[in-house]
Length: 326
Image 1: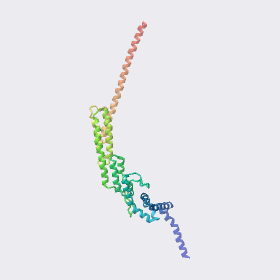
Image 2 (image 1 turned 60 degrees about the vertical axis):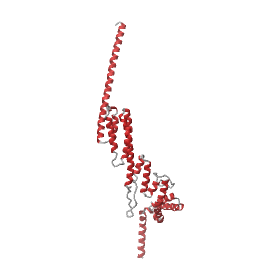
Image 3 (image 1 turned 135 degrees about the vertical axis):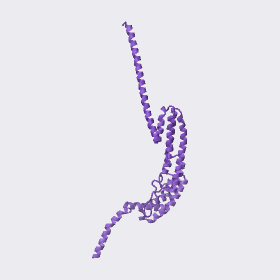
Image 4 (image 1 turned 30 degrees about the vertical axis):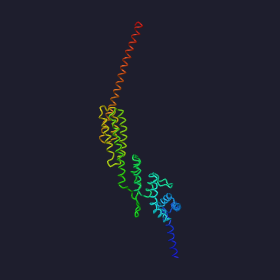
């Protein structure tokens, strides 16, 4: 009797404990189990079809699913073993077709770039190689360059088997150095082009306005590229300040000092800011002086007109009195 009581107690404890164990395991939920089994079914079906792209997508889903091994350990092992080789083959095929880069991740319709295949299998060195290939094909595309520069964002290395941790991935120094060569070449090209535009600063006020607009545009673009270089955009800023000084050295900079102000504001150095502040003060004083002169001139014209009108009135009055015999 005692044995049956003990056995009953044990069974009761197990029954009560079982739901909590199941609840703690995220893979034992109904939805998770259903999703894992569905992924397994798709992978098994795809293995028979023999289509590499569909094969890759199915295996990728299996390899990244933490719950699949609860229901089929073999298929997940096959997926992890075959993905790298299959991914490289698909990447090389895409590269041969000229499909180097795309924002979309791996797609089952085959419209996937070489870059995305390499990214998917974690072959970041090859992904970087393809990325640099595209950068060199789009040398002056700053937005794409920024994408290449920030490529490591979101990347992680392999999972540590002991801790399960995945540390952020950092590309080799050579990758950044190659990108900096591109940035430097673009900056040099723009600086040389700016020199031609700046030649117009010695012309009349209209020439100065046009030259300033074109010159500043190139200096700002140069600055954008130089921000990726070790010394930053100091050369572009320094040149802008020099251009402002050139304008202020003109014999009569009154009608062009606004252009100098544009250069100083872009330069942003302490000296340039001081020059801009002084120039702004000077421009306001000139504006007040011109306004005052205009008001005085207007007043003089009004007075002169009033005197002329009075003389005309007096003459008319005298003529009328004479005619009437007064």
